[in-house]
Length: 377
Image 1 (cartoon, rainbow, N blue to C red):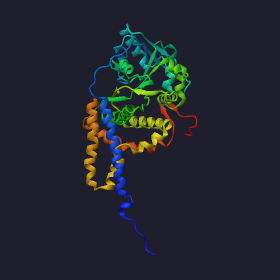
Image 2 (image 1 turned 90 degrees about the vertical axis):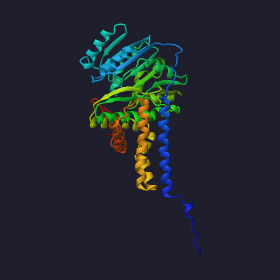
Image 3 (image 1 turned 30 degrees about the horizontal axis):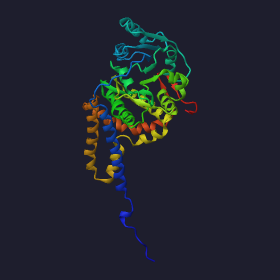
């Protein structure tokens, strides 16, 4: 009996599969870079149809080196009808004295400092803001982290991003002013990794909330149960994204990320923060989190090296980070030699962070243990 042999071309080879994976992942990377770059193109200034009242709601906890600048930017917005509510858990918080001095320097801008330690949701930032929610007077509320630097057109930019089909406008942070390698590493995570993915996803109509900036019509959240309704997940931005989508609405992002001064960081600080955010993503969107193992230059590089001689890996890696460096320069993100070194280090850490995320579900934030009710850890 004669056995019929299959021709080699009938059987997909490992080389073909590896090249397909490399092209797929590299193409996805280039597509997200181009979508993000498109958002940073020069554009004509938009015009608001109206100027509704807005309340800026900012939680404070401690006073980092850049917080004087970022908190004072709250008073310098080029928008006529807005007020500010600062929330602190304790009267002896170092930020309180600084805020009182700022309010005295800007008496023309309505601003209040509320103090109280409410513990209702298990999310310390959300609990800090709860006392401010009933005091909101604006039609819209901009909940903004204390370490975000607000440009003069901040509120106008958020309102211009508002569309009839959305219920929330958000924005990731863009790291700036790193003062050492680990500060550059923090920027590399924030900018060429997280901001790139979030901004490009929004360009395709798949916006996700980011807790740095949450801009919502107060009546919408009141109907959903108020601020406490955002305590259903590890992070308020995950809960907000799910809430908005459950209502058949969309999350929209501002055209570009707003600046967060970084300064000096330690490796441990950066690592702990990335683990915390990674666990939030795993808990909130586990399907998407599983795909994170394919991010960075390592997976397509490994696929490439399976298919071609190793020498081709050198131009591949150079080209990969040349794209990110070009995007960073276009967007105004840090892009010097130290910053590019940090980009490479970030991608080497991505699979380690992904694996470490599975060790447990909860995390500690500012001395507060946070986790889901079914978390066995």
